[in-house]
Structure formats: C-alpha cells, structure tokens
Image 1: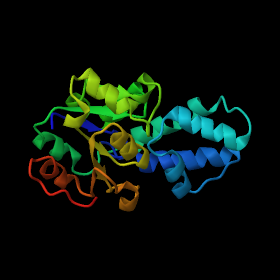
Image 2: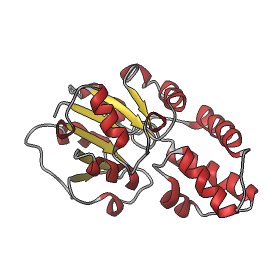
Image 3: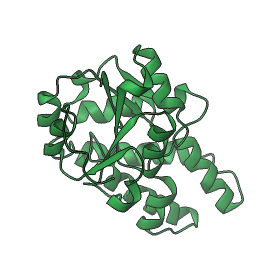
Image 4: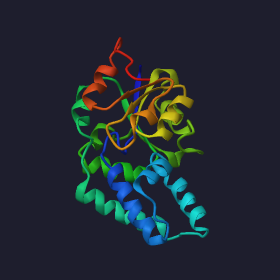
Length: 217
C-alpha cells in the first residue's frame, strides 16, 4: 500500500446525519417528503448533481432554488453541530502512509467541513472532488483521478468509504476498500469483494498494517 484515499462525509467528518436531516426537511417543503432511510439509500455518497437530477425527476419540474437553499441550510447545520468522526483524528495521527481525500462534495465544501473539525491541515493540497471528473461515484473516475494525480497505481491504493456508491467505486477502480460501518450505512450494505468492513476508527491503523486480518468481507 502506497496511498490511503479517504472519503470525507461520514468517514472524516460526522456530517451524514446532519445532511440527511437537512435534506428531509427541504424535500418536504418542496412537496416530496422522504424518510431518512430512503434518502440514505438514494443520495448518500452521490454528487450534488446526482441529487438535484433525482429531485427534479421526482417533482417533474426544475428546482433552480435547490442548490442555494441546500448549501445555506447545510452550512448552518455544519457550523452549529459538525464534529469529526469519533476516533478519526487519533487514527490519522497514528497513520504513516500518505493520504488524500476524494469526495463527492465540492472542494469548497470539503475544505469547510475539514476546517470546522480541525482536520484540514492533514489534507491541504491533497483534496479531490467529483466535480473534477466526468462521472461521480459509483463510477471509479474520482479514485482513479486522485491516484493518478499523486502518482500511485490503483492496485497500491486503499479506499476508506462509508457509502454503497463509494465502496462500488473503489471496487471498479481496482482498489482495496475499507468500509466504515460506524455511521448511517448498515454493514451489510458495504460487504463484498475486496472490502473489509469495520465499525470503529480505532481499528483503522491495524487494518492498514501488513499482515492484518481481513475481517468481514
């Protein structure tokens, strides 16, 4: 292993719970009430463009107000409540392998959330976004882009993800994946080929140590 590629939301920052709550509230005001479980299945791990397209299909009309409403509500929630994922700061401090972030969110969003949680300095200059590639997760484009930019072959990368789309993207990229099930996504959704599922960030560094047990697959 030469590079650890981290997703951001739900892996580094505990933002998924806040985002799903905000999305449920805003969608209800637009006339498309969805439960949080359905939002999790439809949208978590996907790009903002994918979400907007899904909303417009469901409503049968364009929703030009969505990006600004969503960004403002999410930013307010982040500034009031966002914290790092439990244990991730200690895991990052103990990790000796090179790292980067590859997120479905925009660069500005990633920098905001990492900055609010005190993690930005650990990744500054090594942040990649789905806005930089043709297709977001579950396509492999973003992870392949990050690896190429840092000069590391896909087979030497390991991805840390918490979403179904992200895990699938890692598999398609030919990268080993560690599926973090300590957040909203059930462990069973992350299990599969080339994937080790774990639910405690204290296990991250041991899982990245040569000869570590593979765990649940």
